[in-house]
Length: 442
Ligand code: GDP
Ligand code: MG
Image (tube, rainbow, N blue to C red):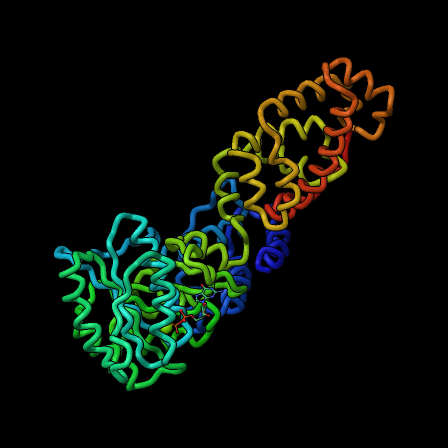
């Protein structure tokens, strides 16, 4: 992953105070690879890297972050900005009904999205109407009807048995129907082909002209990778797009399509679809997608928390202690716990770090009373025991338990937890690019 590769760079850049061109180039190379691995289209990667380099060269040196971290921070910020910054909301018509038209290749997830949108809008108090304007495939109307039933939303479809209906007419008539039945939102599902196709595009354009949509949403499968650019261009030119929805983000795609599509269309990504069920659907979050594309969990958020919670001096001291598993003492453990608590709920922080799920679960229960008990136990130890917990044998455990008013089991639990934390700090030290490990001097 990118974080692994960047750790190598972090190591090389340790102790450097300032970003050199070579540092920027080396980091940019890794980021370029990460973007390509995430299936961001090459021209998009090139343009993006160029602007990153420019910004990195002009960057002020920041006290709390090392140079590589600083570049990553810039990259992340730029990615979030390129992905849209703030989440954009749906545009509603001044005069209802608001018309939302869905366009995209076959299998991209339009019909599923229609159902999800209908359910979501209904939950917000709207009265949506679903319109089956995909009359290409025999089963398409039925599929929408099933989804509509599940969402509890009416589906407008051509009468069965009338032969092959005209999707443009169905779409057109549906607007009148919506007005008459007081629906405030009309969601028009359309047909797609497996590839870009002039006839399909003409049909989509004709439906668009018939319903004058307030939003024309381009639905794209996040797994498509490099094809995203050509497809997005075709829909941009053929139908006109006002917004994008990424589907199948529950798959293992890194989501590079998001960046490509956003770049090509210039339109915001409104929602993310993350499964086959109607509830598998969320407003699109640019910051989450940026982290996903970079493959770094929420390392960025962690870096930001670190900047806020540690002053430079404290950071230096921590850095020295944190990285060396053996040098990390119970005294440090306590200080670290205090710092983590200041950063935010411990479980949240740990959850942001890749590969930390296990420790996260273990520490999730570290509430205030636990924390006070831990403090009491550690305060009941001798300085020697705090530096070298290995010497804490049975009789010492009993003494510590008595001294802190807890059971021997509590002491054992703390020591186990400490051993876990030692491992974790080692990992965190590597990931945060902190200086190398130091031996205990006491
Ligand atoms: P359409 O041809 O564009 O209307 O695409 P459909 O809505 O029929 O979706 C095609 C297939 O992808 C169906 O089997 C859906 O259940 C599935 N699908 C749609 N959206 C998602 C998603 O977000 N995640 C997953 N895993 N499957 C999805
Ligand atoms: Mg469909």
